[in-house]
Image (cartoon, rainbow, N blue to C red; front, top):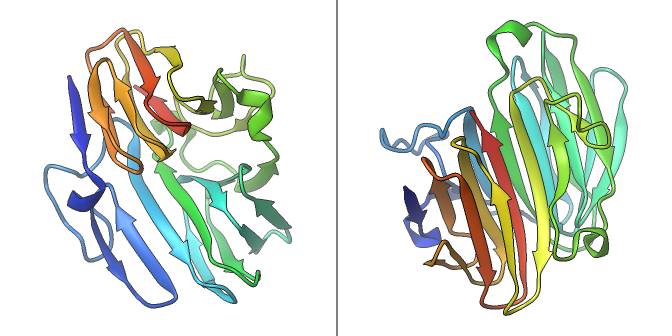
Length: 233
């Protein structure tokens, strides 16, 4: 099954400083058919205006992955962590037993990002909170998938999450294809830029592509494309 959820069909709200589109029910947007996909609970497509951002607020028992598309985001939290994550890079916050954090765009330009929430495994609820960030230069994943965040010990180079899931990214040139083996698991794919086909089904930039009951997906780039995929049980 391949279900394309066009960008125009997404929920969302424009708060001025924040223009957010929601792939899944979130805040004031509720669609019973789009509550989650496997362990993925939230996929927000955010534009954050310059010199603005999210003031301190709490979370618990959620794996929050931020994939920065343009600009940069600056993080501060109640554990004393601070960091600036730039375009093409990823930060992960495991909220665990509880953490308060702020995310600000201190730049002179808009920042755009994907904010992805993944529900932790039941046996990993109540873990100590943590935060981490890592650069993933686009040139290092040209034409191939890079594992950005993972709950699997074998993926030692990725940022760690407390969930049976992987977040991967790739850049693909127009006319080229790239495969990903789901082996019966669920996948949710978004092209941050560019138009693509997934097993022959077309999707535009920032459309959501929900995949289930497929062993392998083949992504063909109709234009130069930047891809983000979450694989989950």
